[in-house]
Amino acid sequence: MEFLVFGEDWQRHPSSTQHLFALFNQQHLVYWINSIGLRQPSISSQDIIRVVEKIKAFKSLQVTKHKQLAQPTKTINPLVWPLPQNKLIKKINQQLLKYQLPIKQEFRVIWCSLPSAVDYLDTCDGDIVVYYCGDDFLALAGVDHRKVEILEQQLVHRADVIFAASPPLQQKFPPEKTHLLPHGVDLDLFTPPALPTNKDQIKTVGFYGSLNTWLDYDLIIRLAQQCPEITFHFVGKKECPASHTLIQQNIQLHPPCSHPELISHLTHWDCAIMPFINNRQIQHCNPLKLREYLASARHIICSDFPAAQQYSSHLTIANNTQQWLNALKNPIPITEQKITMRRQILSTESWQARQQQVIAELQSLISP
Image (cartoon, rainbow, N blue to C red; front, side, top):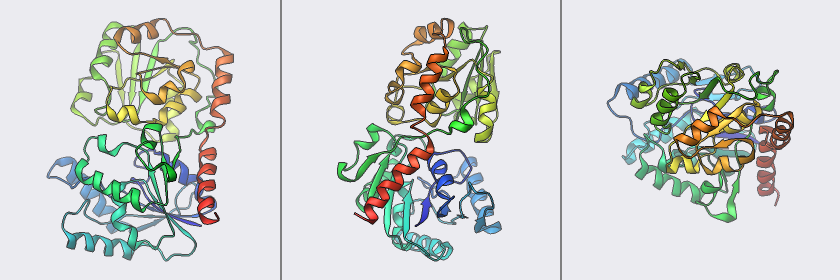
């Protein structure tokens, strides 16, 4: 069995698809097709930079071969125009990608983590089509929602099996071919060598991930102002204007880092936070960092969203500023028993366990 994967750019940021296929690559051929966008480029500095990056990747290395076991067999940098409206451009895109694809060697599974992949299914010579929905694309910022909705409907129709990362996402799709596939966790990476020194008090707080529109910046600023004794750390790229308002003296901003380096930040925090706004995207999300925070044995405080409710006995859910302040200033003690219980729960939620679920579903399609 071999996999042709339509995902985001490999190693641009950690994702559930990358975690899964780092494992699949150990026993299967994995051909990773870097991101085919979810909106047409505009004349903006950010889009121009991304277009230049794509062209450089295509010119320097159309097909990248990797030596490390965790990497795909090949990474393909497609030079295609995102979400083309013109039929001729769409046809040219398909032919360009077809030229870059490897010759089929085994039973081929086409794994689509982006709805835009549907335009290329007929050029891929696949035996099974998988749609993996890890986000509510119709609620994401910076996406052509009208076009993506049409593409997603087409992909749902073409898919033999659908995996959804959260129950709200699962409910969007036909139940007869949709399965819940929550995010996993790398327990080896996120189980710290030492427990936090401040089990009963919070002096350092942290968040890692994109500093984007789904964070509640007003809340963060209020917390920093009312808790001057606490240092707030944010690790990630500034992706929206509001992120530039985090200028308080006790707020420290750190640049993005590789996924394995995140634990070096996390182990220095007493508490990990998820201060999200309440919108459709957050209500449907299942953050990778949720289980990583749990594995780290830190205090956890987060906004109220469905994925967090599953672990409500192992974290503090805060619905307003006062509840956040109470949680920061009067944290529930972390006991050895609670840490053990967390790890017992997470032992069945590793990426290896998620991979085995995928394999079982695919095998049932191949040999019903």
